Image 1: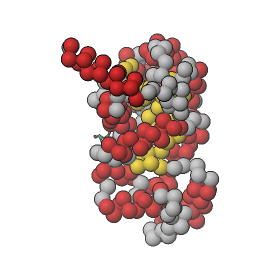
Image 2: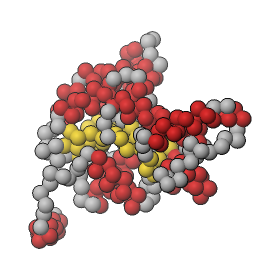
Image 3: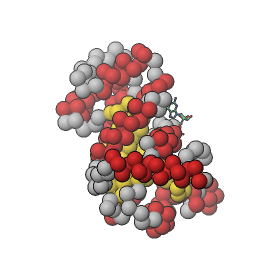
Length: 280
Ligand SMILES: Nc1nc2c(ncn2[C@@H]2O[C@H](COP(=O)(O)OP(=O)(O)OP(=O)(O)O)[C@@H](O)[C@H]2O)c(=O)[nH]1
């Protein structure tokens, strides 16, 4: 039986840890166990229950202290991730061997990890060798995407990670809850397949105007070949989380091998759980 994993990716501050924590809470509501592995050696704060933590293997401060003369913070992170890559058996041990497990990997935000160096690609290969079906969930802060040139740049960043990793990718615009009505409308024009206007928008800014033909051409290629599709995520709405998780599950065919339970069986299980709660 396969196991399932989401690599939660995206620039620093795009909401990866918050996303993981919301998914765990959502899992509790719908009775699904979702485990989170922290893969950011520089993580300072997250509020999900951590299943495994790369900082037990290596922390950014250790690398910086040791290698201070050679690296800045970004170099330190690459050093940590290369160390992690050489010690993937540590991860294998942490993940155990249970079937049907569902993991989220809360990844570091440095984009060069996905575009310049092969570390994450090797992680994906190894997870697949361990029978995981892996999907990338790439988050971008929606507040930075309401202008067309920034939206395009976010889209290209996501695309370059997707090409590097070669796994199903779900692109998510996070923090939609903080957008004004006007900004939501603008964003809709970029992502709604019926209105796709990015390629047709006129640019008023003079500097950007010089590049408008180039932007339009790139946007046309991306849209014409359906290379990137964005989903919006409003964490304050349970429906928004449910819909996104359904898309992700579809992309990795989560649940396709599960036995179909008869309604009576489900009821009996629920009764058992109810009595277990009474006993405790
Ligand atoms: N309003 C709102 N704020 C959010 C949302 N998601 C994240 N935030 C806030 O954005 C900030 C960054 O969120 P994180 O989840 O730490 O982002 P991250 O991508 O894990 O950041 P790094 O660990 O630095 O890579 C925090 O202050 C969060 O509270 C959201 O959906 N809505």
